[in-house]
Length: 115
Image (cartoon, rainbow, N blue to C red; front, top):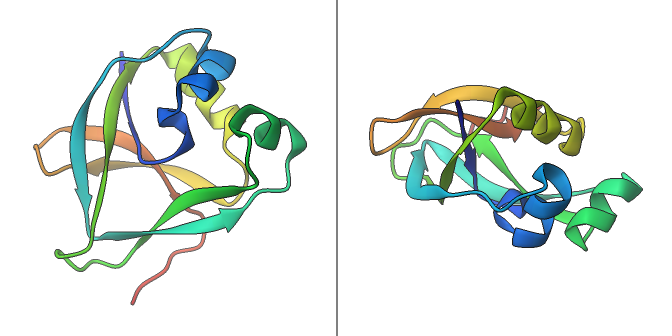
């Protein structure tokens, strides 16, 4: 199983059903050293799944007091590929360690951002 942290639309039941064909189970956790902002989505399929063209995105700052709340889900390797297909080019998937000590994948801004 893979672990994937979501702080945005992948937490929405409708997006989970359309992307994975099921509702995901997960645990709340915190990503430190990142800030959450928004990105405008232009992919019509992603907009249709999420119902919006504005999606959250996180950017690295390296500042411990910057935190993003979300959920770590356990998914299969095939579901991780489906998540990759859902996310647009503004995102890149990286491994991170969370407040709980858990290591999981997370989609961050493709362009590195440091305050």
